Length: 489
Image (cartoon, rainbow, N blue to C red; front, top):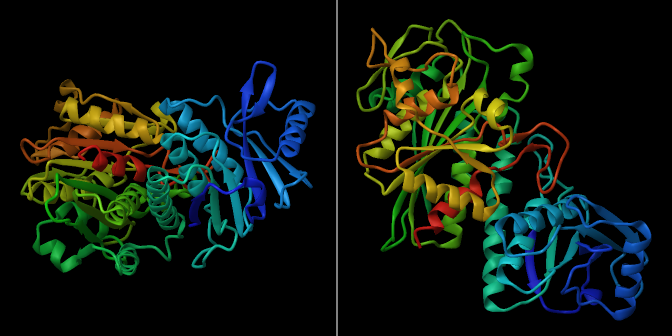
C-alpha cells in the first residue's frame, strides 16, 4: 500500500528513485504524452530514444532508461498508455499502462509519475493505476518489502485533483487488503482468523463488526452456512461489517462468498482443481475492502457487508448429497453436490441482508466454473431488476472492471425443483452460471433490487502479472462496489 501524493513541482526536480513518463501512439510512432513538465533538453532526448527504439506507446510497453539529461531520478521509465481520451476504455488503458510500469519498480522507495494531462478524470486514472500497480505479494504471514513505498504524482494539484488522489489512495488500500486476504494460505486464513483480521483492520475507522459463531449460526437458522462448514475443524462464521453515516442518501447491502478453502467436500475436487481454492473467499474479501473504502472516503451512504465464511472439507461430519437443510428465513434446500457450496452461504447472507430492507443488495462470489468457461476474466452480472443491473454495469465500466450482463431465464427455474425440499440447490449441467443466479434470487426479499456478480474468472490471476494485476489475488470487485455506492450520491 503506497503513500500517494500529488504536486505541480517540476518533474525533473522531484526527488525519487524512478520517474515514469507516459508515451502515446502517434502517426509516425509513439510520442511523449502532454503534461510532462520536463526541461527541453530532456524532452528532446526522450523523443530521440522513443524514435530510435521504435516504441509504439502500446499498453504494457515499458522501457527503462538510465542517466537521462537534467533529471534527478536515477532511472526514467517510458510507459505506453495507449491513445489518451476521456472515454472509460481509454482511461482504463492509462490505469493498466502506468500500473504496469509502477508494478515493475518493486523495492523502489519512491516513484514519481508524470500525469499526461490536466483533466480530473485523467489524474484519477493515473493515481488509481499507480496505487494498484504499487502492490507486491507478501510472503505468508509477513509484510512485503517489495512494494513501492511512495508514489508522487506530478501534475495539477488543484482541489479536485487532490480529491481524486485521495479517492485513489483509499481504493488502493482497500484493494491491497483484499489481495492480501486472498493470497494468504488457507492454514493461516480460515473463518475465525478472517474475522480476527477484520477486527484488527477496522480499528480507528467508523466501521463496526458483528460476528456469528457456530452456536449463533445454529440458533439463527443459518442451515446453509452450518451445513457447508460442519465438515471442518475450523467452524464457520458470518461476519457483518456496517458503516452508518448520519443522514445517509441510501442504504446498500453487500454480500460476499467467503469459502476460505474449497476441497469440494464429500464431492471432492480433483487435486489440480484445488490449487487455487484458497481464493474462493475473494467475494467476501472484496466486500470487506469496499466497506472499508466507503467508510474511509466518508460517503453519505449506509453500507452493510455480510461475509459468509466457511471451510468446505470432507470428514465424517461433512454434509452429504441428498441432505436437506433449512436456510435463514425458513426455506428448505436439498443439497445435490457438496462442491456447489458457495450459494448456500450466500443464500443465508442474502436472506439476512433482506431483513433490514436495504435499497439494494449486491452479492459477489467466485461462484461457478461455468462463469470462467463462458467469460474468462470478465465477470458476469445478473439481476432481478434491469435498471439496477444497468446501474451496476455503469459503475463497473466507470472504474474499469470488465463485466457482462447475463439473464436469469425463467425456463431454467424448474430445474431447481425438489421432491424433498422447497428447492434443489443446483440445476442440471446446462447453464450452471444462470441456475446459480436463479437459486440466489430465491432468498432476496420481495421488492429489493438485487444483483449477483460471479467473479470466478477475474478474482485470481494464476498467470503472469499484467497491467496493474499481480499474480494471485487481483482485488476485483472492490472498485465496482464503491462505484455502486457513489452512484447514489
